[in-house]
Length: 128
Image (cartoon, rainbow, N blue to C red; front, side):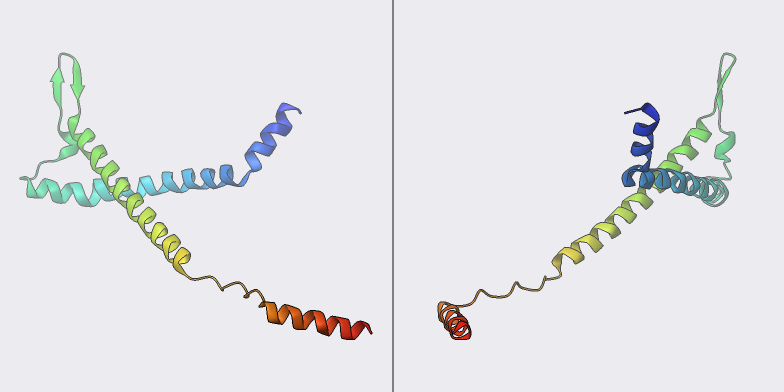
């Protein structure tokens, strides 16, 4: 099998396409969360902590500038994304659990010996 054909089969499998969609949506969701943290949450936290702007928090080590405020914002981004993903998985699992709990229709009961015998008698009478 050629490399191109193998790659095409791999790329067209359902789970690979689902993963690609998930990555794209995750990237867009990450941008939304970053905007939420940068523009809504961090200004409020800064106001509560005495108007500290976390994005400008840094210290110098020799010539290098360590921007730990940006790190704090990234950690908050991660926590919000993790909480949202956890909530989504919890909702999906609850739907799956409810779906499993719905009783399936019972299989038809097997005929009793008496019904089997009557069926045989009926079939014999039809054949005569």
